[in-house]
Image (cartoon, one colour):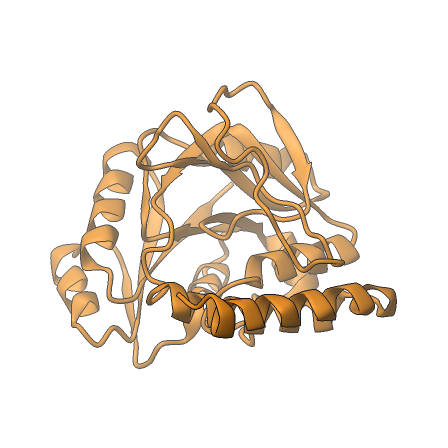
Length: 267
């Protein structure tokens, strides 16, 4: 199986550089760097520094989904079998791709795959083994967060795979298309994609046979900005996927949370 990795940069020179160097050191893989119109010139700086990998410089910020979709089209137009979305604030300490490729190649019903994601600052603790989706509350909590990284969980079916480390086989792309760019600039696009895959009869799985380390929250623009994006996209996500009977519970909870964070207890 031939997989193309996509690393998306937006004003994150130091993190992106560390990610690319760690990839280069331990993983034999084809990597594409996409800069999402960074106004600080970090994209051009990284292009000059990493001359052995292809770089695409978008002329504006397309968001997480839009920027990664550029890379998804790039690799699939070149007849790759899968793409792997890798956040720029991740660190690679060991090879991870082969284990995911083996599962994807032997399990056709797997539509989205991901590794175990550990805390970069606490490398023996799990950040996410995928996540659960609750359409009643709109919450999508990580599984196993804060638990020891034991590597004995095997292959787990989950509601969604964390977007920081997200494999899409070609068969999934051909069936349901690309990421939904209306979730701008970020949040809920990976949960949306995994639910779309489930509706198409495909599973989302995570395995601790592969691990990456994630810093998290490095490009959100601050807690208040991240909160606004999260709340807006949570509403959009529910509008796209919730059923009528979910709304009498979800809508009051959403409003109460918004009022609490904006009026009563702001950041």
